[in-house]
Amino acid sequence: MAINVVILAAGQGKRMHSSLPKVLQPLAGKPLVDHVIAAARALSPARICIIYGHGGEQVPQTLRSDDLVFARQEPQLGTGHALMQALPHLDSGHDTLVLYGDVPLLSAQTLSALIKGKSGTLRILTAELADPHGYGRIVRNAKKSITGIVEEKDATARQRRIREINTGIMLLPGKRLQTWLAKLSNRNAQGEYYLTDVVALAVKDRVKIESCAAQDDREILGVNSKQQLAQLERIYQQWTANRLLDAGVTLADPSRLDVRGELHCGRDVRIDVNCVFEGQVEISDGAEIGANCVIRNTKIGAATLVAPFSSIDGAEIGENCRIGPYARIRPDTRLDSEVHIGNFVEVKASSVGCGSKANHLSYVGDSSVGRDVNIGAGTITCNYDGAYKHRTIIEDGVHIGSDVQLVAPVTIGKGTTVAAGTTIWKDTAQGGLVLNAKTQHQRPEWQRPRKKVKGDK
Ligand code: UD1
Ligand code: CA
Image 1 (tube, helix red, strand yellow):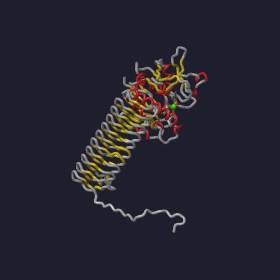
Image 2 (cartoon, protein in one colour):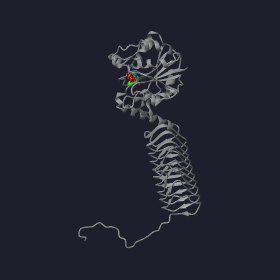
Image 3 (spheres, rainbow, N blue to C red):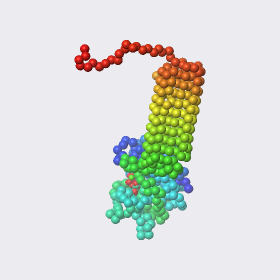
Image 4 (tube, rainbow, N blue to C red):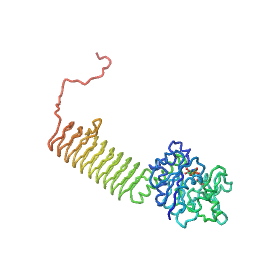
């Protein structure tokens, strides 16, 4: 059954103390409301309408997408008033699901369960809380049927003792929505148009009211402060770690893992502590990630070892490679299998062939490196002339000594050996040894300068 989804996201979020609107604050690397939109999309709704207000056009500008419509609520006069702004965008033939932009952990399963069943019913996602403080309470009659929702500020002392609360998430019958919203009033403690008052209207109209609970109680948590944002981040990360563990990934410590995007792992992948994964990351069978690595938008081949403190962004890394410790791999890098990139080596926009090695203190940028190449310590590709970037081509089997500068554009021919300390600024022929003519002098009479001490003349 098709539905409309309305995401309420106009509130201010004063307690965030931030100029970024609350719903745009990041959780696991993306705006809070993006998580809500993702859960909504999983339901294949006919329409997703986002109510925005605080923070102005920043919200629609950030979220813009073909399948979203935006309605501005100005001023913000309550949750019922917020939903009124969506009416022109909704198909009244469909029921409407109301979500909050600051409740990001709701699962698609919980939402599917909430919207399942016959159309025309009012369905409310509720929860039993040990501490219901601050929430609207679900009021039931002697037969346990829901008769209303009362906000904390309007509740009697007795009602405040009710522990069943309104999460705010509800499914409203399309045929009734417009008439109910028109009947809301703001005669209450906060002078707001409460969406929750539709419950009493449903009772009057003899519309069936049902409640339903989330699969996990923590799904309904909202974000009003940076503390809550941090708490929800931990819950999200814990769930992500559990999913990886269930799929067979070995995590040295599931509480010290951060996934800000999607991480896909093959069999027997091991991940040590304090690693951060961003964007789309794929790690193949038997690969191992050492402690304190930051890896984004990267594919890592089977049995590859990424040693601690490595930073990898936008790379495709083959099988059986050894990366790091302290390697930096930047976007548009492709490493074939059995490549070694060692400590303090930076590789950018380069391809490196099978079995090649750059083990210490190098910069390889804008380069095509062939197979079985050895790049000695301290070798630098001088790719930038101050205005343009140029490419360096290092053909198969080249051996480059330590501390070599390759001034691009330049090609090192197949099998060439470049002597330590050479500056290459012209293409080399294949094979042989290339070196700069330098002479070595020794002056036996030369003395190292010495500091004067008292008494010296
Ligand atoms: C609301 C519910 C309460 C429920 C609680 C759950 C009402 C009257 N009360 O209370 O029963 O227990 O949520 O957290 O519905 N929003 C707008 N425009 C507005 C007001 C709010 O877009 O004019 C949005 C907010 O950005 C937020 C959501 O609606 O995403 C809830 O608003 P909030 O002020 O947090 O509602 P509560 O008063 O806490
Ligand atoms: Ca709230």
